[in-house]
Length: 449
Image (cartoon, rainbow, N blue to C red; front, top):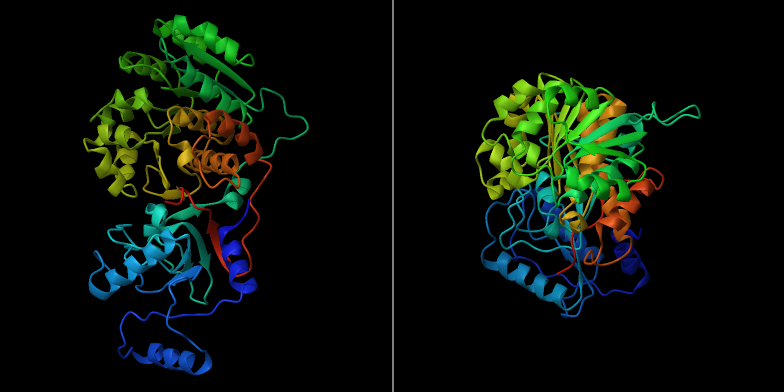
């Protein structure tokens, strides 16, 4: 995959650019900053901008700015926007000017193609990826704070270290067995997508428990899996579920799903992933769900609206508080909460958080979460560590979308079939390590507008 940072660097080195500087205002700067400016004036010939520069470096504001830009800064940002609209590439230093480094608030902020940020990833960059563009964290000799406000960023090395390889003696049993419960009438596709996510993540066997009308469709689309009618009582549920190493409940389960969720959770004590309708069945009752889970390894995979129903908040409120909102639910349910999005925040019951920033807008489509639940179910069965499984699943899900996109400028037209096909490559095509001096690198998550 082409690295945006390298492409911009190549343009800067190969093309004979004349450098123009547009100062924010001609005023004295404090201490070393003023000395650095004077050194630059002596050593370089710097002209006023012509207006047709192909590369714009945004260094108007730093990480301490708050609120919408005003006055000369706002005028400078407007000029940067006009240059970008005519085709110039924009590189922001540390954060795009006007972007709040902590909250991601971006009213009036620069829209960058690449943000080169210093020493450590800023939370606001992860929240406002459309403004940040591609992100590279570079080492400038400043030690990372011991108590960083940002949780650990999950990357390829974390995933590789966390997942055990499949040995030569592996068989379908050692690769683990999962049951997927869902697929009401007209929703067989949700279980099919979850099953494909599971198989593409290395599970050994899948059993689907679906509505009678969905059995034929599931078996036709997933010949590797077995499919049966939903259990109609506790006894049949125990019989069908005792086989499993982990259970995924919720994909396409339907609105009237609480009875089925309770039946499944009573019937088995194995690790469980709850998705979609299995989560919203407990709206405003996370404590009741926690009682049913009973301290077993468990993962919840809500999108913003589903998480909002659990805590009695709107989807927009959840997105603003995405780094915090999962903690209360995780504490009350005893489950790891995957707050889906870009970034995806995985919060454990003890408050520990892991963050995955992989992915792009190709995942913003119905059925994407079903694939994630299949990945999470497989990794939960194989690791027995819900927090690790959740973080690795979130990263793999996003990475599959990145591989499906490849070098395309747009994600429009990418289907979930392409994402699931790319999921098999996630475990093989690991990203190249960052260049020397680059601590972390993320591709752009959205399309250029």
